[in-house]
Length: 55
Image 1: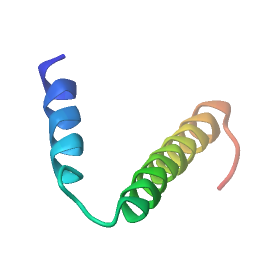
Image 2: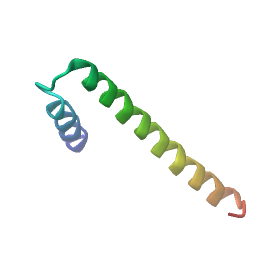
Image 3: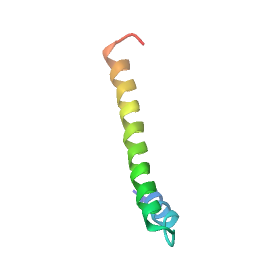
Image 4: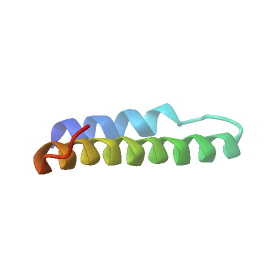
């Protein structure tokens, strides 16, 4: 759990005192989008590997 807290602190520290504010919002949304895409790619790979689909 300490690792997740550390990553959360790094995430919030990266955007502290960042200007302009709209850029911060866009970068936060983009980072969440990238995280979701990475999760879907890992999920798809594991799904295909365990269900025997050919690549």
